[in-house]
Length: 195
Image (tube, rainbow, N blue to C red):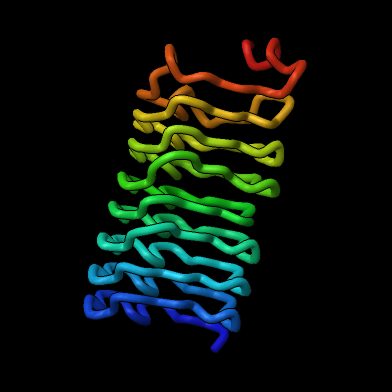
């Protein structure tokens, strides 16, 4: 099996555990959306694309979600409203599209985005209130509006690009506590980021 088609298992609430085999390359749009009984998900190396709404509203999905290094793009709303996810490991991806992790309230601690990531779309991590730190790799060249808005628990932002990233608006970090949240930038880049 190399392909899981659109809507293949949408609304299959009796599914509690999924392991995507390494032979699969593409998880298409809405493939597992609204699988509200799903508690465990393993995505093995080999998958290159996770489509739009692929795992949206899997509200009981918990534990650590690992996105393997072979994945190149995360579709819009791919994991939105997965309230009970505890942690996220993204090993390799070059694009995170609109609202991919929107309102994943359960995500806690640090989110370390991988080197090679270039594009973080609008609302990608919107309202993930328990994230405490985010690491943005040097490869990122665009961050969309509200990408990290309402991440109310954010305490540290590690920005590795030597020059400030092209951002869509002033709302990228809207409602983040900018008084107490610390921005770390590369040595010699402080003046550029002040501007």
